[in-house]
Every structure is written in C-alpha cells, then in structure tokens.
Length: 236
Picture (cartoon, rainbow, N blue to C red):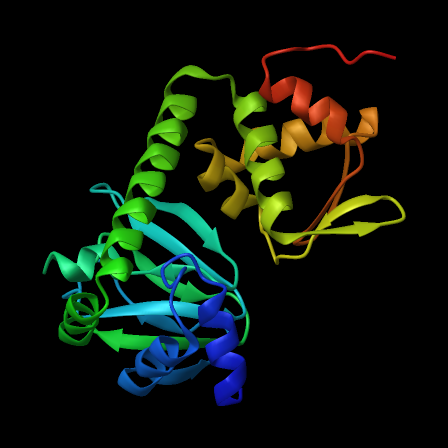
C-alpha cells in the first residue's frame, strides 16, 4: 500500500478528523505498516497494551475469553477502524484478542508515540474522547439488548449491524461479505449455535435469509427490522 493511499485513508478516519495532510504525514512517519495474513493474532487477551492499530484493509475479529473458558466474539472490524487505542493509553492489558479473518493491512503506533502525537495535535485527543463516548454508548446498548431482548431480536440485530458494515447488494438481497460461522454469529448475539440453526431454518422457510457455509444473504430486511423493533409480524 502506497504512502499517499495510507494518508488518504487516515484523513478520512474519525480520529484524524479536522487535521491537515501535513499532520497526517507526521502520523505516518511515526508509525509503521503491518501486513498480516488471515488468522494472524495481532495481540492476545491480557497481553500488555503497548500499541494501537488502524485497519487499512481486511477484517479483524475481536474476541474475549470468559473466566470459564468460553470465547465470545465482541466485534468484527472493517477498514478505517481503530482498535487498541484507549486501553493502550491507560497502560492496561488488552481485554480482548485481535485476529485477522482475512489478509489485512494495518498501521500501528506504540503507546508512547500516540501520547506524544496527542500532545502535539490536541484536536486528535479531543477526537479520541468523542470516539470513546460513542464506543461506550454502543457497548451499553449491546449489553441492554443481551439482557432484555429475545434471541430472535438479538440475532436480527447482529445481522443488520454486520450488513451495515460488510453488506453488499446482490440480486437476492444483502450479502454479508464476511466469512461468518454460525458460532461467530451465536457469540455476537449472545446465544448458542443450536439456537442459530433453529432460527435460520425458520427464517429460510419464510424467505428472510439464505445461509450457506460461512455465507449469509439477508433477503427480507423489513422483517429483520420489525423483529429488532419488537414486532413479530410484517405488513404485507
């Protein structure tokens, strides 16, 4: 990936919003490029948080192990997303593991460099606070959904959220262009693989989705939106 392409991508990111191209060049000079093949771990849960990452190309899975050893997928990241930023600035350990799910290109800065850059460019520090606030609201909303909503609602919400990030229009609907196992979806929705299989069988019969091995097409977005809103019926 060429230098000007990296700078263009950073200029479009939320963290560097409002910065000049010269400022973005400083960020590029202070970091380094990483090419990571699919299924590469960038860091593991409980590793010292000593670096921040920006995803330029590819996809990354953030997952967490519970105390009883169960893995939970926290989030699937697409290009132009930062991760590891806030925990690195606080000097803690990573609360999740980060693994590429396809060949990916990332930009990386060590923690001391990020702190130095935020002092040099105060607007970036303010942008990071805004990002942290939005992240907190998003996670709070997800916790509420996991605690209060029915399984079908949670699965519908997870699919719609994935579609917004990884969806691609096709002749039969919105295809999620992410290698997504049913176990991944179960973890995102806070359920189990058996419930996912049962729900998919029902939805395929109703023409709501078509699902294959690591492939899901959303054929009836209206139905999924109604489920998310707590409705069980779809208007004709």
